[in-house]
Length: 146
Image (tube, rainbow, N blue to C red; front, side, top):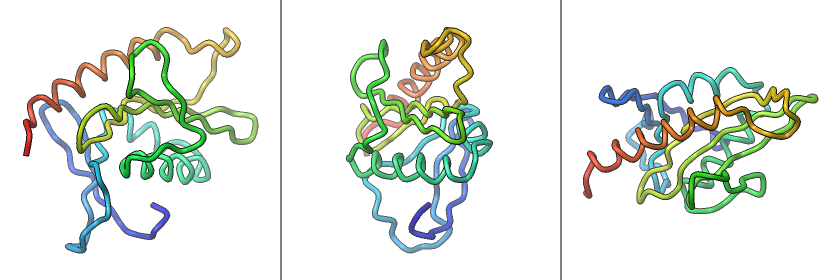
């Protein structure tokens, strides 16, 4: 993270969803938890450091209820699903996240755009995001209200 705090990942075993947990007892000024669905975190960590830094900042803003200039609506999944797009050395990287849940930002998918169809996102990614959104919805409903 940009502020230098260290975080560990905690796995919510029922759905393969990970969340950031601060390494210290110091309160973290975050409005919503960052929850990573399935391999989204692993895929994100494979991105170049510069891309991770900018996307991490954008996700941090989402946790605070703000929107990064590079975040735009993900078409086809309804409101509250955003895509962060970062270009780096001729490659395009994307992270799709859900901000429609109170107190949680679910990172659904992170991938390098390698479309052979121009700007269109391959259907495999679209279907994966839809399936992970269903998993996030189920996880959110199982958590209940605090």
